[in-house]
Length: 86
Image (cartoon, rainbow, N blue to C red; front, side, top):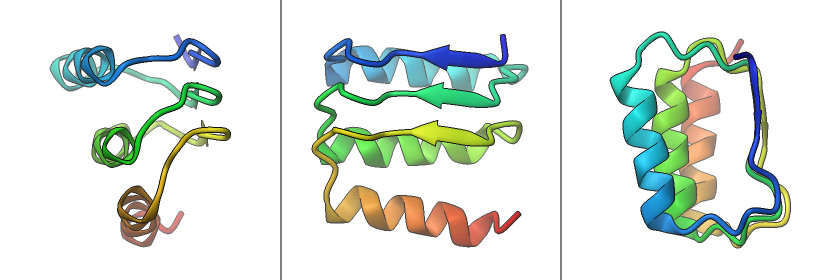
């Protein structure tokens, strides 16, 4: 699987942590594109996703539009981009 869209599913933090745990457990996840837009994700969820995405070396495109992300998650994603400038 190269692409995953979870757009508009109103994913709760507990479900997101299950997704992240599954990604960490399966090191062969080869996602290139992931869409979490329109999920009302909170800032804590954004931070958790940024940490998860750091381990996903094949990931090229992330859509987080229309969520409730704020300063903390923004900083986490900025760090991620600075750490992986390609």
